[in-house]
Image 1 (spheres, one colour):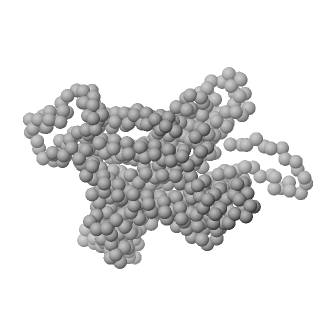
Image 2: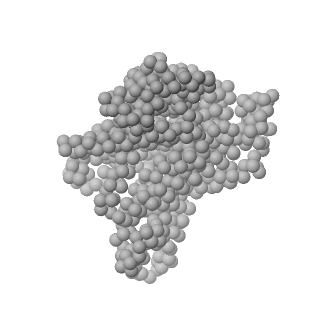
Length: 299
Length: 305
């Protein structure tokens, strides 16, 4: 997203300052944002631990030990066990793998739909644009999640369907943002040049427009991840999402909530894992946005 | 203004039609019918049931029958609750959800705007940071974490409230807080940002220069502009309260529409699920219409668009 360099009248001493590119500047700003850096580190560690869970988890996630039952945290089971005697730490790690995968996959779906839709709407402009954006407005006002529940009820609780359904819900913001970007890009010379050269519309959109909006897409994409994970956990909590024996953080929280009177740790630890992940993702996303998009940063 | 309202009302008709059509065909394509229970039913009984509910007619006839019924405001009989119509079930459960939603929205609007205004008055001080930290917390914590936590602390450990149920006035407190927390936090952030933006406007500077008192500037000059974004947010907030009620009513065992919907989903109660979805969609569309009108009324600039 290289902004056209403004010719700067260099007055002497501050030449070193002027030598930063947009991305370097953004990186410097991001590094100063301690919350974002902390959140980023936390997410990386957690993601690594979750994806390596078959290697590092102390126990298997579904080995039951009915004789043991639910125990509070101990040296053997750091975070305790659930009522079937399964190790909670291992279940949280494995659950994180599913929650994070759903988060990434569904975000990808949302981003693809949103970028294509927004680009087409912005590029064609005129009536097409008005109609397409009106549709987005209308969709915004609908209780989408209820349709996802309907979908999950009808077509079985399939995890791939879950990716698609959640992705199909969360693309609206992205399409609006991308449209705005495309509208301003459209007026720039290199697009006019491409049109003058007689390139096909498809090619202009795919090769010239979309690469130029990618920067902003990545920023807002990171803000979609926590929302998507929230939706997944919401569905799993109600029983319409990930099904046993697989477990996501949503299902773990749901199980924990059912037995919190006797075994509060079953609710507290999954809830903590989930909330701190959402927290960190939000900090990283906000930090990225503030670092890259100076105008959008709030005081 | 009237033209605007009429236009928006007309627009809702095709939207509702599309929603009705989509839900109908999604249900029709579903594997497994509503009468596939664990108990073995003889084919004759099944055929009898299907005939009674019109399921043996061709799909397009069922569709048009359904639409015809909808226009007359009839949502059909419930498949699972014999003798009840979906409309009756909806109207028996909705008041409970409405009450809960009103409390949550009231908390969000009062506590949220107050916190936001207070924070904006003393930007970058403790009175700004503390409420905003709580706001970030409130935005990140989902209802299905805060709800059980509130029950654990205030219901079980302290024993101040019943852990679940909807029988006494005190039973309203925890669910309303759980449902309203996210919106309180969001409204706080919106109103803080809105107020800060207004404080930077030229007309506020003019008022200051003319020696208008601080409180008059806040109440008379800033509030209306500063809280516009909060009004805009009420539309999406209502949609969110509806979905939030599914979780909150499940957690606290509240006999509202959200819990009915979740149970109907598990039971494959076709007509009930369709009816609830349509009901929610209509409700939210009408609420958005209302919010749009209030917005245009509050912000004269929009009248020209």
